Image (tube, rainbow, N blue to C red):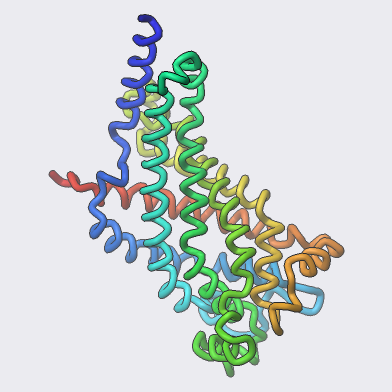
Length: 332
């Protein structure tokens, strides 16, 4: 009887804690995609220079400087922007849909299993319920990995074209620096498969990156969320400041973990995608050996942490707000 009471109390605590959260079924999808496309495009424009700096650092060698020799800031650090903006919107729609649907599905079913185990697992009821703090990072991690993989068919061609523009020599960029020229040259030299160079490695990279990011983000945020509660005894600190602290801390924790653990794979993928020549000459193993011999696997780590930290903090905060204003009961 006490076990049942404890189970019900934990379930009620979970329900109260999640009552103010926005789930996939709460969202007006048309509003989400409409507002989200505008918001994401604006963020992409604002943060694109960080992407350019990261990519140039990752592919830099002794004979290839990371700085530009000529041109304005806009001309140099907004290379490839049109490609990214046009292709990132459908990729983001696929990503968000997969992320939220999968996360809600896994979270709901996992909690149902923990708090209402089948008869065969009834003897392990207490042990199962002790796992409840891990449900949020678990569902977030699995959903994040699946979301990252699902959008790669659009992201990989976007990366291949935009990154080639980012690392072009200044003189060549002024003459041939358009997305259409780059795409035509890739298809002429390698066929349509050239647009998907590094696709397998991108899948292999995006799965752990997405899993680590969303598991870390969801886990840290779940542990800190009580600080953002208006009823938490910290009246001296405004609620909005506490919410900002939780958001930034969660995003930077996720960025730090994902950046460090997946940096070697990301560096190898980038070098393969921007290299000249047929893909057969640039296998992941060959590139890894070359980079490892020069301690280059972690080249560009700090820019990547900065990129993922800033981008993740801004994007996750914007996304949480976007979900809130996209609720079906918003302004009702």
